[in-house]
Picture 1: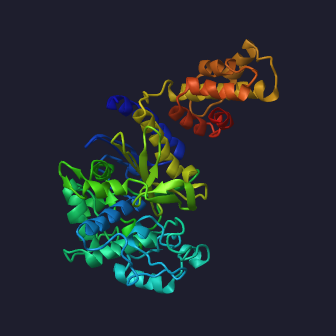
Picture 2: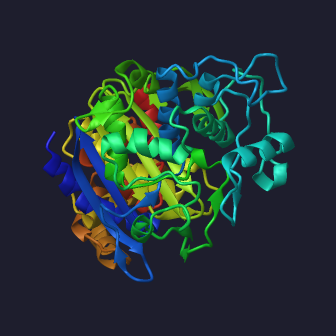
Picture 3: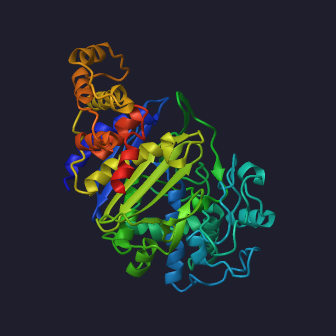
Length: 485
C-alpha cells in the first residue's frame, strides 16, 4: 500500500466531499502498524474567522469516547477490582427480569436500558453520582420528555439496545472503584491517554472553561448545525451522561488509541491493556445492532461494532456531539490500519443515520481509504468534472434508450447538441458526457450491463461520490443485487 497514492486521492476527493455535504471542515488521520502514517485537514475550523482546519485542531469525539470508558473499566477488571460478570445490584437493577446487570452487559449494550439521547442540558452537569441517582430514580428517558423511548427496553441480556446511560454507569464504576481514588477524568488521563502519548485528548465532565485547559479549547473547532443551504452555530450543550461522549481529541491521538488496541493493548510509548483483554474488545462478544435496534447481522465487542469484512475484517464506531460535530472510527484488525475522521458538522434533518450529510462526509472518505486498504489505487481515474459529466452521459443514454426499450441510439449530431447546450453549475466536460451517452446500448440485460459499465469505468469509491453529487445515489443498485445473487 502506497500511502502517497492515498494522500493524492484524498487531496482530490475530500474537497469534493465537503462541498457536496456542506461540511465546513474535516480532519483525518490514518494509522498503519504502530504509527500515524498520514494526517490531513481540509476546509475551516471556524467560518467566521476563516480559521483553517488543521491536523492539530481538537474536536469532540462524541460516542467514540465510549471506547475510552470501556478500556478504563477493563483496566479495573485486569487489576481484580471488579469482574466482568459480577452482579451490579448495588448500583442498578433492571425491573423487567430476575437476572442482575453485569459490566459485560453494559459494555455490550445488553443491560436492558433503553436508548437515550444523553441527558443534555444548557448547563454543565452535576457530579456523575448525583446525575445518575436522579436519572435512575426517575426512570424516564430524555427524548421528547420521556414520551418517545422507554427507559427500560428489555430484560437483561435479551437484546442489544444502545444506551448512553449504560456507559455513563460504567464511568461511574470507574470513578467509585479505581485504586488511585481519583475522578474518572483523572483516571483515563493517567492510565489511558498518558501511556499512549495522547497529549491533545481530555475527557472532562463538560467541554467548558471550568473543565478543559484553555489551550485545548482554543484549538477546538466550531461546530455547525446544517440543513441544505443553511448553516448555524447553536448554543453549547452538555451531556449529563458524559462518560458516554464528552471527550475532546485529535484524529491522530484517537488513531494512536485504536492502533494500541489492534496491537495487543500497547504501542512503543506504553501499554493500556493486556493482549488478551485488548483482543476481547475488538472481537465479537454478542449480537449487536444500531441506534434503531438489534440486528442478527451485526456483532458487538466491548463497545465496538465488529464487522466480518471478508479478507479485511474491521471494527468501527462513530460519535456525534450536539449540535455541531461528527466523529468516525474504523480499524482494520488484520491489516492493522486505522482511519479516524473529525467533521465540524451535524445535520439537523431526520434522514437515515448513514444518509445524513454529516455522516455521509466521513463515510465517503472512508470509501476512499477502504479501496486503498483492499489494495486498489484510490486515485480517481477522472477529474471530478469529467467523472460527473461522464456519469451524466450514461444516465442520459439510459433514459433515451434502454429505460424505454429503444434500440436506436441518439445520433452523433443529437449528442453533440445536448453536450453543447448543457448548463452545469459545477463544471462540464462535453466530451466525457458524449462518451457516456455513446456507451449505452439496449442489450439482453441492459440493467446489469449499464451497472457493469459504471463499475468498469469508475471505481466504486469514486462512483459513490459522483452518484451522490448528481442526486442518484442508488444508480445501479438493482443490477448490483442481480450480480450478488
